[in-house]
Image (cartoon, rainbow, N blue to C red):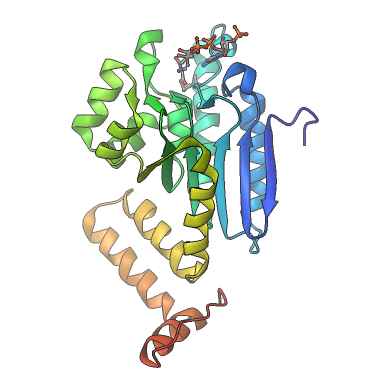
Amino acid sequence: MSEQQMVQLKMEGPVAILTLNRAKQLNALNRQVLTELKEHLDALQTQKDVRTVLVTGDGRAFAAGADISQMNNLTPNEAQEFAQFGQSVFSQLEALPQPTIALVQGYALGGGMELAMACDVRIAAQGAKFGQPEVTLGILPGFGGSQRLPRIVGQGRALHIMLSGEMIDAEQALSYGLVTAVVPPEQLLSAGFEYADKLHKLGPVALQMVKRAVYEGAETDIQRGLALEAALFGSCFTTADREEGMTAFLERRKPSFTGR
Ligand code: CO8
């Protein structure tokens, strides 16, 4: 891993916290940030003891977008390659077996908002600002925003956000369904841990199946999506967690899942 540590990984029991650590530049996403993020994801995706991943930013921004000073001199081919690199890192984040929660304080703009959207759940601090201001720079979102935003908030709202380039506040993001909760800034991290605690009482295999059904199903038509759901449903019946969950219900006790 690079010595500068633009992305920190901290473990707190079963929770991994990924923190963008470039506060002076409002956590602008340059190649090094994305590379370090990828290195952490490479490690996390095989760590079964990690049950939830929180993604957050240090300072007064979650992330204010891709690094404009680094993008400014790119050739068309280099720009396409950079977009593909960022997309692949965010797709890797989305495909993590563990649930991921973006904890957004301050600005989540451009690539920063796209990073938040590659997480499964988003919680905002009061005062957070979201936006896809790429059009103000003469570009369009390039780290997956044009694809994920319509899937999350619907085409009309997504087009409004991307065409206007205007920021929306945390309350509006809540009303759009872009975030699921808005909390006081000082409670943002604890809100992430509380959410993680709730997930840890559930079977990790079932959570993983939900992610796969949603994300892989979104890539296909409804008939194939339904077939995928049925196949995943069937495979749950090979797990000890399914047996424990149903037996515990019938015995009127709390289940104790083992992740098998
Ligand atoms: N890139 C590089 N540096 C940035 C960025 C950024 N996106 N955002 C902020 N910074 C830097 C500033 O340059 C400044 O640095 P310095 O102190 O050295 O001058 C520092 O962070 C603090 O920023 P400001 O002084 O501007 O702080 P303000 O509080 O005045 O303003 C804003 C905060 C409103 C967030 C403002 O910084 C801003 O508008 N930032 C840019 C937001 C933006 O346009 N983001 C979208 C970028 S494009 C993108 O994300 C596309 C993703 C896909 C790329 C595909 C690859 C080709």
